[in-house]
Image 1: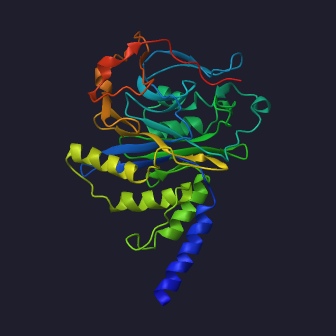
Image 2: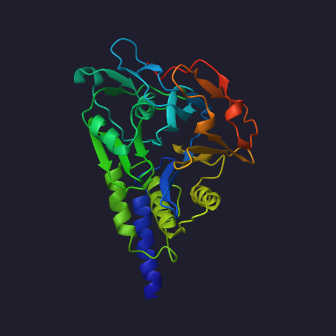
Image 3: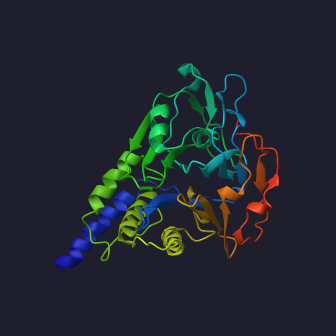
Length: 347
């Protein structure tokens, strides 16, 4: 009876914590037995966000996508990225081995961009800016902490508010999460920060994790699909998973982890439009510069070797069209076709 009461008390706390948030997507950093790193991510959304893969070369002229007053830059690194409605870069890996993942954050508040008096950056360009300009997490933290731009977050094509927090990882296993909360940039920088979900903001996720770290995960873990519960389960599974030395098995382990936290395709909850099924999953193998992609609509995984893409300065951007969910398997760099890059989300 005492054990049942204890489990009941934990369940009550789990429900309370689980009700904090109801958004989607999960990201983690998996360390292999060779002390290399792979970043796993799920894209959970209430509809297909029409993701394509893009290859963007070094030397591209870029801007923040908001017309006059936008920040401008030239990409230092090439990258392979996944798009979101083809108005935003939602994740990717660059030729220096930096991995960027942006997850939805309902609490995001970027403040008054006009009042900031800084060059403007569309939320759709934020992830791409990091991939274009930085080789390491530490370099990105140093530069972005100076807040060289103000973010504008127009409405998404599906009518939902645009908002997200950005996570970065590199070949050393370093990690950082960038969030705008109440108009202020908050940066969490530590190699310890290997798991991120959506809401609540990351400092609250850490508090939830502190509570659960002393609970025996083999006996009880919170089981809903809310962000806070997925954060706890992913932390436990990541720490429990073996650090495989064989690279093929290491990537298989990373995929098994992200699948274990995925939400069944087509699942939705009335009144909570951002609790939704997993549309796709990815694993970024930093050591081999290989980007793996798995669509929930298809029975196979495919991947892109960055070294096989044409990403040198002067090369043309190229697109892997995933419209209608074509079935690919194996390495697909040869299937990218030259294309005009998409325009970042604007008002």
